[in-house]
Image (spheres, rainbow over the protein chains, first blue to last red):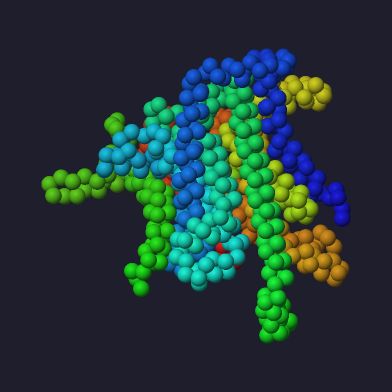
Length: 300
Length: 298
């Protein structure tokens, strides 16, 4: 095996390209000098200064609130959409449905943001709701595009699942809802968690949609950062950005670690169950009798 | 049969996401189309209604003025072309950098693969705003890159990189590279290595079998990755706003200015309609590709 092929070299360089700017940002957030490019020694003053900035802290709380509600709603909607697309092969409007689920992934945010704002304005004129735009309208906008991401994540998992387990439960008389909540849901739980965390992160990050559909008094954290960043690089913003970077990396790592542990446990449990059944003579007979019925060539 | 509980449950599970996406994703486009035919007005909301009902007559006033305005002002044409050019070349750059990276990950040991994937995926969870901001500090004329180059004696005076198209390209490739790598990896990792072994047994060079076998087989991954980069970049706002200069014309930025600075909602709507019309073919291509991927596994 050639260890240092061209593609491996590009991989290492690419990862450096991805991570170096973020590392530099974090290092400079500890810079004591107000001049962003001059190193003035280590200091925590920009971090402690953040706590006194009540405008910023208010924006953080609002963003966290919207992100939490978005995560819950996007997981519910996205899982339903994923279930429909993987388990119901034929129904009228399936192509349109598939398109509606995947299109938000690529649609430029300025288009989605503008169109949603115009919808809210038209709805306010027609039915009187939403009378004022604010956190609820931001939540609707975020839920719409996050549910597409959840659908993609959950769909990948649903496709891998062994259908025979669900079919067995169905054959034994369980209603579809029961099958979903007792059989399917525990098996796709890691991807539901991943989808929820992804939605949380995406909602926390979004600037463009929130700018279009927000109202007075509902400035979110990215909007606050953006208005500061427009005027140039500032040490306070370095500190906020570093905190966001660190918390997101920590959350991602945790999510990855937990999913991996759950997966390993599941595989081990399945292995154990298979060993047990294989040791059971009645099952062995069944398997043997199958081998006799199906000639080996039929497998290939 | 029609009223069985299974069918009503099925209707519910299809209906809820369908209604949500219809109401909050599809219907808004119709409203954008409608308002693009309205006239700007000093009112709340700041546009005229295109439907008028008086003396038992329903009048529909379709104002094509916004579209004529767009076609007559060279700024808008330049902005569309600028967006398409930047999106095209940065997609190409992402493919050239992302393909070897995805290839290397797909060929790595299984336990290393998950670590690499995590490293690639992590930035996509972080705000594009913050990652672009990180580059502002590096590229500015008294920034890290310039002081490094000056210190090494490679240049005599600081290079102007921030607020140019070069900075926009760096920002776009930096932000969208993971979206190219992930679908490419998902495709490349499924390839059967015995195909390459067979090719080499038959005397094909590594490079030949790469071009004749690996690349054609990864067509769907290439399409998915390119569309995931190209389509959003055409409408990108944050990167040209923060890294680009006054001469960086991109349509997302122009739309933002029309809406937030000039408060001209009808012209902003017309800009969005034209952008959507340009992107319709790539979006359909992307959706088809996703559907194919789905059917292939069903």
